[in-house]
Image 1 (cartoon, rainbow, N blue to C red):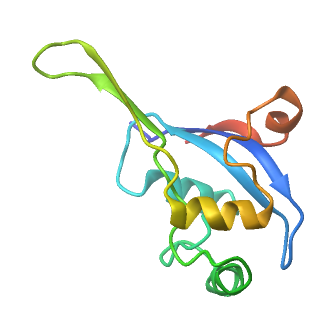
Image 2: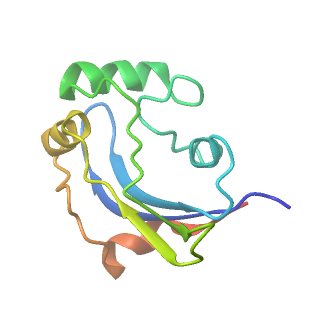
Length: 126
């Protein structure tokens, strides 16, 4: 069975050296490096990704905005508890080493998805 990731664009900012987008990615299967590999396949690698990203872009973003890590964050995780069989939902706020650079780039940490900003980059990646 192929891995699937559902992706939608939340916001885009025009920056140097190029426009960058904040996206929401929902992997269906949760395979190792699934989100990173699927975004690379689309030509939109995750900033800071040493394996599937663009080194020149990673260096430029680190120098200009102070983002020296993989720009990937699991904001929520939901599953059925294996013993109680109750639904379990976990949430995690953005850590400061990601929130600060995103704000310097012009992304609001709580940018809500709207039909206007989600339509340009929405779809299923297999």
